[in-house]
Image 1: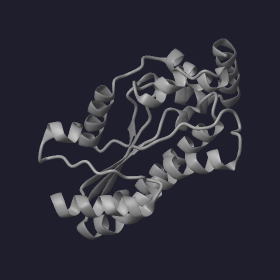
Image 2 (image 1 turned 90 degrees about the vertical axis):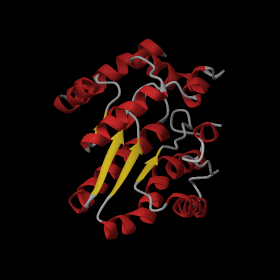
Image 3 (image 1 turned 120 degrees about the vertical axis):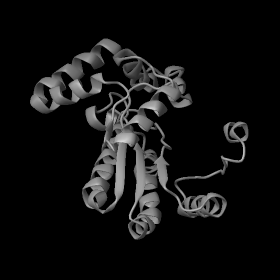
Image 4 (image 1 turned 30 degrees about the vertical axis):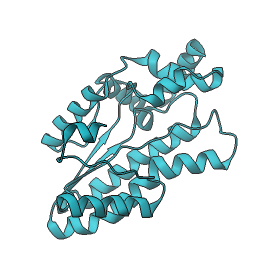
Length: 222
């Protein structure tokens, strides 16, 4: 519907980012319609698992979508970007990738991995024309957050409740504007919630104090 409202300047293609064949088909369709890919936004994400997760399958799903989808996209795009001397990779991670999320271990761990992969891309290719931005918001008004808030099980609601408790829940449009601002400056870390930076600095300056604070927050929300 969004692509249709934009018109011929947009194309909607169904894609399972966990399937490399789907991703490559998406890129091929994009190239044939618009030409070379200049910017790729790795925006798909899943929130699965409660606590340690019920089994390896939940961990595999989180890893596949939240991390390996980014790796697959980079693997498909970086060679052509290097040949052209330019390209832009936008990774949607989460404040949970900097601060850890109370509730779901698979979500928190894979979002940390997404941040680390974006850092690696920037370190490895930043001097060769490839820019990288990593988006780390707290609460955004999306179906994923709302599903967590509406979950019937208290343990399933915990992570979403912490996010809603921690700061404003932003609109996707507001977050998109912050991403565009960061891209104009080729800034790596995109923090739609500015307070995340102070939380992150506090964590780095005294890890044990930060962990104690997170345990207190968990007790308040649970």
